[in-house]
Image (cartoon, rainbow, N blue to C red; front, side):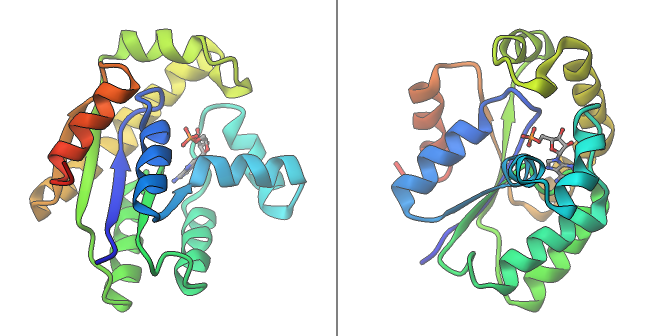
Length: 186
Ligand code: AMP
């Protein structure tokens, strides 16, 4: 059976790295909206031009652009053999739109995984990453945005009974081992 996961957690928790590892091992699609948007910016597409102004300030790109992006992926069949959504949903309207799109296709989420890490560790980690949107003030803004917009999503999946939590404090292999344990894969 194809497995469908949503990875939640602040920037810098390493959820992208974990998503890459798990998707490779399980042969399921890793869909990182941040990565897709950065590619669109680099390629200078219409989407990229619109997204750039928000991303460079650490703000969220408008919901309709993100929902359209995910809708295209679902409709193209790219997610049919299982997926990890990494960086989406980020707001409650995105969460509700996703729920509706999945229900229409009778796709169920196996787990929403929340990666947890204290803020000071996050700032330290991101400062060392050297990406354009990882400047300290931008990082702090992204954390602030995360707290306001994304935290209610945790409660949404918790109420559904789908939320599992993994501490992101260990090294990559340590977190991966814990991840597989909470997903019942190890
Ligand atoms: P990430 O690599 O997931 O941290 O995403 C980098 C940036 O892309 C974010 O700071 C946002 O500006 C934008 N972004 C990525 N995913 C979303 C989303 N689901 N909704 C809105 N903006 C997003």
